[in-house]
Image 1 (cartoon, rainbow, N blue to C red):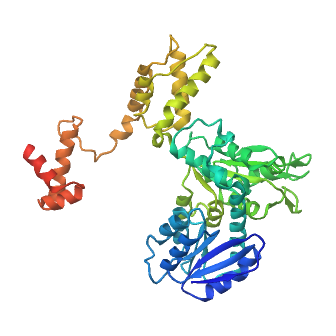
Image 2: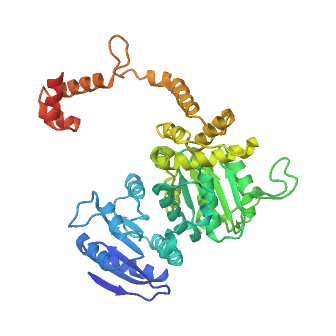
Image 3: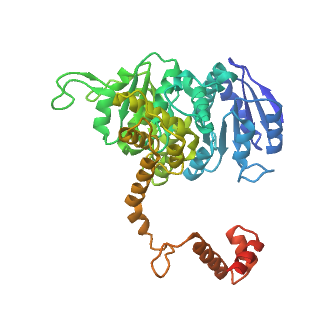
Length: 463
């Protein structure tokens, strides 16, 4: 491994992992222009991992085609070893699927060979900004900020999310918040704004259904005469959010024309008002949210890959409520207190039985659904205490409402007499099917089922 210090302004460092000696030499030139004071290189994964154990870096550029490691699992190994430094992938494979796959695994960026000067400058500038703001926040960012006081959560998953949001909030870079409907994406977006230090407004826009013209008018405004009825000039929401945050919800539903305009604004902060050919600029931080799988959109060519990459630099994923059940109790108590206030009662309490019933529910509507359940139960309560029977009735009613969809699965193993099978009967049929597929070989059937061969033998003797 060799070190190659280069003049820089911020003392930032990069590690280039590539067995081609020409790559580090090219990288050094453009790293210095973005404030990187040193660039080290390693020709093997082993040497690079040793370097990461010795000292931290502000950016790692990783070639997936190293001589001493298979490509599979390599990125994941470096992401773990380099944490919290970002890892950018450098590869000769220019397939979109490869790039998207790396971004989904957690890569900071994706650079194709032969290396483009413009692409390298963009990469290092982005990494430098991320590193500098990370240093400003410092090691103490693990303490939960008051900005999240409005989000009731005690689970480790949500506390990790808060810490991640605290780290990226001051950067000014776009943030993509993803999660199922009802998980609280706008609340997290508002907390990001409060933590950002920006003194402008927090402005929200639901982009679902906005076509290219309407999107431009809402966000960028229009000049007089831009269209019939445009009797004067109107500034768009990017001006209202100047020096603040613009929150774009339902970003996964926008069309291709809107995606082009959004990408241009994300890259350069530039836009045109409708009816004007004068280029304008706005300084607002973009936070975007979606409940859709944008990667699936890239694969189906309904969402631009370059926009996806641009939005993937700062991803925040809000876990669904069913994955953080320890938050159900505190949230239920919070919503019960709000319900008491609305109903004009002194207090309304939840009990362990009510929470225990809800803990076994899947919450397809997430926190929003929990709020509705608690409010309904509070309104129905007679003694200031929410009844567990209300939760049971709600869950039973929901199960009946969704039962027709479940019954539509023609391959579900009903018994010949139409009865719903017991767990023991399903287990017997499952074992019988595994034995059929393996020609009666108990060892092979056990491997197929993920159990020990002795388990199969014991259950067959029991039958």
